[in-house]
Image 1: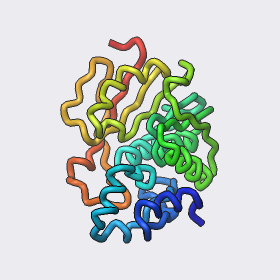
Image 2 (image 1 turned 45 degrees about the vertical axis):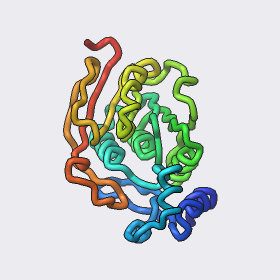
Image 3 (image 1 turned 90 degrees about the vertical axis):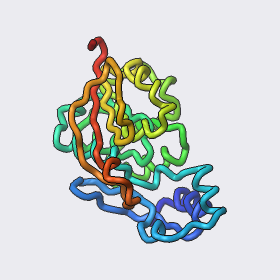
Length: 219
C-alpha cells in the first residue's frame, strides 16, 4: 500500500493520481512513482497551477537519478564503506543506490519535507536505512562523497557547485540539462543514457546524462 501521507499530498495536487511501487529498468531498485496512466491526460487549469506551485518532484524518477543509480551499482567502489550525502534527494534514488552498493552511511538531504518522506518510504521499499537532513549547510564537513542528481535543471543552482566540496571530499554530479557546463573543479567522467519515469516524452537530449566529478584540492 502506498504511503498514506504521500498519497494524500499527491491527491491534493491531482485528485485521481496514485503512487505505484514501480520497478526501475536495468536497475535493482523500486520507487513509489506517480502512475503513468494519470500522466497521459489533459490537466485542468487548476491542476496545472497547483503542479507549477508545488511540483511533486519526489513522485518521479528523473533521468539523472536513474543514471547515477545504475552507475553506482556498476561501480560500488565510489561509495562502499564511505559516508555519503545525497543532495536534493527527491525520491532518494541516488542515496538508496549508494546504500545498496555498501555505503557506510547515507544522508538524504532535501529542503522539501515531502521529498524526505518519499526518500524514507523508498528506503523501506528497498530494504535500506538512510539518515535525513533538510539543511545541507547545517551538516558537518565529514562526508567522503556528495551525490548530486538532477539539481542543475534550475540554473540558479549552479553556484552550489562551489559549495559541495565544503561538506565532502568529493562530489559526483549527474545532469542532463546544462549543455554549457563549465567549472574549474569539475571534469566530465562519462555520458550515460536514461529516461525519466513515468516517461514524460522528453526530448532525446534530456536522456543524455553527463556525469561530472570534483575532488577537494584538485585544480
